[in-house]
Image 1 (cartoon, rainbow, N blue to C red):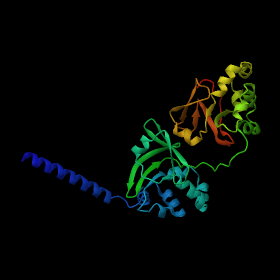
Image 2: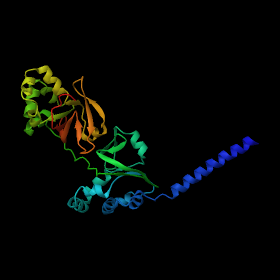
Image 3: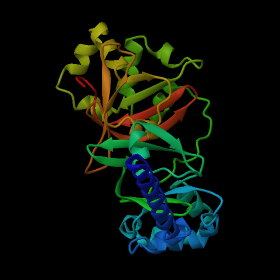
Image 4: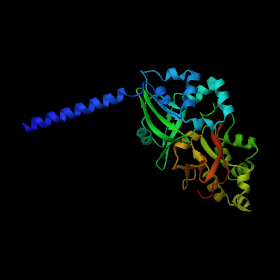
Amino acid sequence: MRQLINTFLIAFLALLVTACDGDDDNNLPDTVVDAAVAEDDLTTLVTALEATGLDQVLADSESEFTVFAPTDGAFALLGEDTINALLSDTDTLASILTYHVLGEEVSSQQAIDSAGSTTATVNGELIALSLDGDELLVNTATVIRTDIRAKNGVIHVLDAVLIPPAPVNAEELTIVEVAADAGTFNTLIAAVQAAELDAALADPEAEFTVFAPTDDAFAALPQGTVEALLSDIPALTAILTQHVISGQVDSITAYSLNGQTAPTLNEAVSLPIEIDSVTDELIVGGAVVTMADIQTANGIIHVIDAVIVDP
């Protein structure tokens, strides 16, 4: 008899918990837009969604969404003129907004579990998920509130607006040719030629990512360093190859590697990659990426402000 009573109590409690969960779901806002409206600091986002008609798309009860929602303060960082221009250019605004939306519901824990990877947005472009200590980053934006639930999805609040990558046109020039044409990588080109790496980096069948120090970066080295390297080809080759990664690693993928290392063509060296928590700058091997995602026929160039000597 006691076992029968215990079994009944367990079944009753399970039913009660299920009923409570159902009540909680019934109390949720109908849509992620309704959930955003209920938040005091998401008014600019709501206005932008309404201006583009995306509020209706996100009201679809048959779909699930995850919205990474910039606060009013995040939008304000763009400047009033930029915001007004976007509100009158709804195609561009819609492209930016859909870059904040996933076509599935992803909880904060699921996002944390996916840190170190990229995921596709409704825009079609990728965003990067990574961790900075206990903080979840989306590209370089920090998630400051999580798991604001609605019946058709969830909102995570960001401290910055995500800007999708600019469309890339296929380039006909190789990495070496693009760098030579830029006019700001003369020392790098001379070094690559001295080490006889120019042919490899000009191979149209290969793909590379090059972190390219400018002439100013080389000039900042101690006096005589460049000359010494040019006369010591093995040392020069070691330095140059630790600036090169096999394959194409765009900035979004690099963001996802925050706190990790990436192997280089110098097998003895992997580059530490991090996002500066104050400036949001991408830092590779201690050098700051000052211009990212220069597309070429056989890879990507990221411009850096220092020569990576001892990453």
